[in-house]
Structures are given as structure tokens and as C-alpha cells.
Length: 246
Image 1 (cartoon, rainbow, N blue to C red):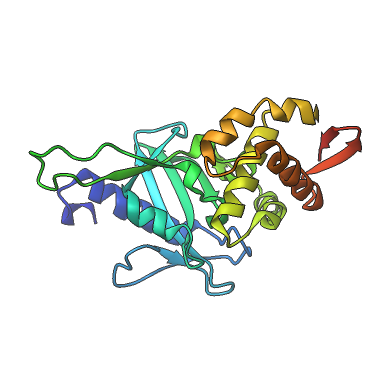
Image 2 (spheres, rainbow, N blue to C red; image 1 turned 90 degrees about the vertical axis):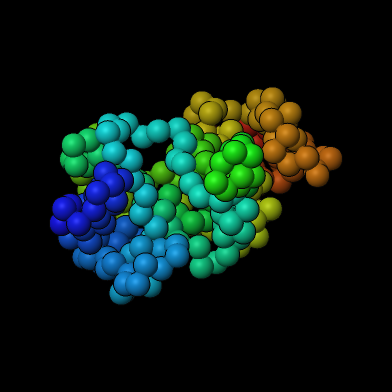
């Protein structure tokens, strides 16, 4: 199969797509197999016949560990996509010598403007002068949004994968601004110890203000997001401005 492709990147893509079709179950509903879309759809690569979930597969060769960023396509296109309910979930695979090292699922509702980084425009001498690409900064995704199917060559129990997705599912919201605030707040909650205070969360006021420059009452927004995270079962309010992670 590799002989049909001269490019190593093309060879790797064919190999990883075939591996996925032959080995992957649906990490959302547990169906035993996902299927490859035909006719080179512009975004999604795979779908589940049971729950109709769609997946985009990206991979990185000669990579043992998960990188901090994933190189992606056009910035404007990706920003437009992440607000679309039909945006696929992302499967990201790293491999070394065609042996799978890591495989994670990033559900589509974890995609926010915060994790999409704009790359520098291509130089005037480039064939696509001025074109602006993007990176997906997975280092900025809350940990619960990076669901491991394989970690350091170890296969994660299927029920663990499915239950982790179900735990993350209450974070799903179609409104991109609301999603951004909720997930950015959760990201900073994850930096706290098991027990933390509202005062400690206020220490990230400046960081959140930079991420959301149109909001001029960030402390009130932090309190609101903590209430939402409480209602969704991620933290417990202990009273007197103190919280416990669940």
C-alpha cells in the first residue's frame, strides 16, 4: 500500500487511517467499529454507524509523547468550524516507526478560540503569500478534554474511556463564548489543589481578562462559571468561598 505514495506523510496517513478503521471502536457510544468516509470529505475521516458521531484523525510520526500543539490548516477556516455543531470530534495519534504511542479523543465541544493559535502569515515570496495557518494548542485543553484511548503504548480500558466522555459531556454547549468561559475557568480550576478558594481563582483574573477582553467584570464571571461547574458536577461548594474538586 505504501508503494502507491512517494511522500512519507502520505504513507503515514494511509497507514494510520487503515489502522484506525481496523482497530478503533467509537469512543463515544462504544460501538465496536468506526468506518472510513469515502470520497475524501473535507473535514471528517470516520463515522460511527450507531451514534452518527464523526471524527477527524490527525497523526504525528516519530513522536512518542503528545506535543503541546498540533499543526493545523487555515486559521479563519478553523475558527469558523469550531462554532458549527457538525464540527467533528478530533482523534489525535502519535506513532514511532508505525507503532502507536498515544491516541486521544478531544471532543468537539472542547474547541474554543483559546486553543486555536494563529501562525505568522506566509512570506511574500511564498506560493501562498499571506496565508495564515493555525495550531491547536492541546496544552490549553482541560485534562478531562484529552481522553486517552492509548497512553504510552498502553491501551486504556474501554469502559474508562466511555465513562470519561460521559463525565465531560455536561460541558457541551453550542454557544462559543459561553463554552470559552466555562472551559477556560475549568482549565484554571485544574491548576488548583483538591481544595481551593475563590480568592485563589481571582489570581487568574488577569489571564482570563486577556482571553476575554470584551468582559469588564471578570471576577463576577469567575463566580458565575464556578457555579456552573458546581451545577455540572465538577466541583463542590463548601461555603465561605471554598470549593472541593469532585
